[in-house]
Image (cartoon, rainbow, N blue to C red):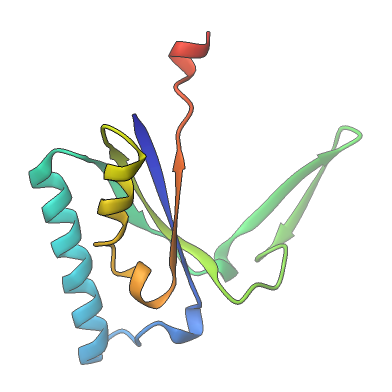
Length: 119
């Protein structure tokens, strides 16, 4: 089963690029990717650009409405994801623990619906 691990972090609490702390964070993410890849559970992962680069799309009464930036003011924003393929939720949760964002933000783990199985 596939699980999406959504990384939520407060952007202002993130280390500044170029600092030793930023380098440590990057190294920790590289190590998590490597461990998951070697275990054969990593399908994909990527960080996201800052939330200020987002565009929200809504369609109301056939009109497309666009909003720049985040829709809601939140302390933590979606900062990236890991897509893993695991035997069960327990295994996915064990892998979520090694994602560095779990230490300074949170990692939401959700099962992905297999659309081939539902159709």
